[in-house]
Image 1 (tube, rainbow, N blue to C red):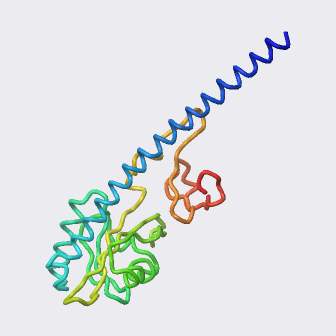
Image 2: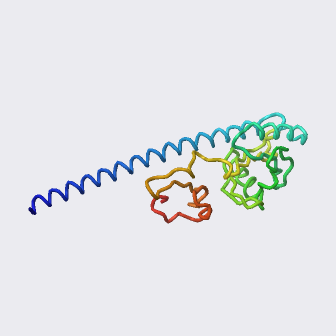
Image 3: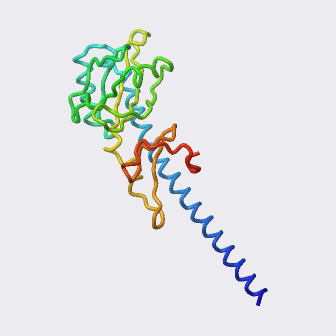
Length: 209
């Protein structure tokens, strides 16, 4: 009896561990697929902002030409909710005229989030995720505007995170109580099915680590 019970226990135990491992692998594949989708969407938006920063209408530093180009891009680019040109002091020169109002998407310190990173590295790059004046979570893609070889300003495309599913993360359910969420490089929650968790720091969570 002891032999049979022992054999049964180890068989069940082995089967449980095998199923648990398979489930973890399935979840890992799902996570990697979502990562690929999010990367693709964000990289396309980044390429759009970088290309626009080199466009003659933007490089001209003529406000009317810039506004026309910004409004067109804001209307046709799905991920970008607002787009603007700033001078090197962080003052807004021109914004698009599309909805939503781009001024509401700006942080309290545009220089810190938009200009300073571009001054350090003169390439198109993502800002840290920040809270806008209207209290929403936002990230920006910032690109240098070079006029006659000198850094003349910064072009920023702003993404309002609540407007975009980012691979449908909020709707993913794993088992009875599991779910998916997205954190930034500091471990701050930026997309989560429970909105009360937004901006909570998960850096000590084993999965995040």
